[in-house]
Length: 154
Image (cartoon, rainbow, N blue to C red; front, side):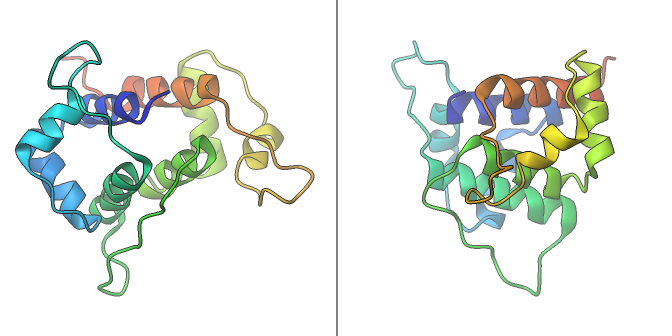
């Protein structure tokens, strides 16, 4: 999944408007403009489309954590220079205060079966032999499950 896909999905899932998106980036330590955010949210075939890099997405996810959990000791969390699916999954878990069972329930909404052991392997340190890389399919199913859980169907 591209960073832009992740950003678009989270915006849709939680129904953030442009100003809320800008505020989330700011909470994560990045000043962004409405034009930048708008270009990051455009589809790839749009001439004004701009790719969002890992560091900018990390700022957004950190801002999302601050929004949902509050500021930690008044400091803005440092954004990682590079992200992988495991880190994105971890940041979403933290932001939404999810336990393993909550995450498994989100996967179940998509009829995607994953064991508790498989899930915990994504959160291990990369040098542990039980560590597993979170593939795009896993992250995509989790994001789609979040849509089913949080997006109103009105």
